[in-house]
Image (tube, rainbow, N blue to C red; front, side, top):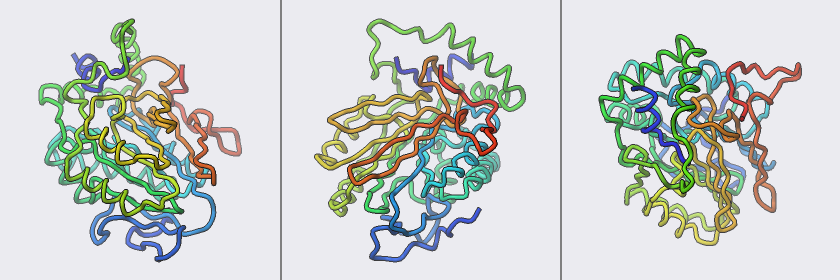
Length: 350
């Protein structure tokens, strides 16, 4: 049974990087080449170096809503040990859902300090906590630029989509309740985690007829505009020679009723592709039409249901000549040369 973000919140609450402007040279299959005007703000903090080695990147899940202290920050250090070409987020990096620009900017600054600790480029995807009202949109545009975009690197095409186009805001009456849990997690994470565990023990009991698509209400809709669909079609047309396509979006649209995403699947056609999403705070892997559809768990966010998919992890993807290989690594098991992960609050799966 899918546990929706809005239902969960309501129930619970009653670095040596290449500069972003230094785009790699033209003509090389190993160069980072964005499909956008990079003259202003860009949705990455640096670009991967051109090279002929295999493509290797790390995917991370949600840091929010309700981030557990220290998990995301240490995860960035841990992923740095793997030395991927870049880190790719599926969104939900800040708590969002407020109109206070100074507080939102402070949330982004904390994220940016953490991502710099990986020592490799970081690629942003918007989530519903990152884009949910006029103020968060304005800040994203100011700091990140494009809300959906594409780039090619080492022969692969990356489509970074926005499932909040337009957004579905959290009703005002729930924002204060949500932030009461955010504050409790920051002040007393043990108490907050027990509150969450007690809540989960008495809520969202599985139904015998539950399906993956049940339970998503208005706040969990996938919204992809016609303008964004036109961008996707154009990007796919211009990159028909890509040896693999990676589609990144925040909400797992294949689990929801999303006519727009169904159209994107038709556009993808018979090309080789893999899809990554987040949002549910629970790891699942589906194979649809022979393609991998990967719903990431968390990289700091709270649990939303019990089970083996509740874990903090990263997915290390290597694009081989025959297709991508995947190393799914729990943060609690990703250790340094001294045998230490540095994680004290990471979920390890249950």
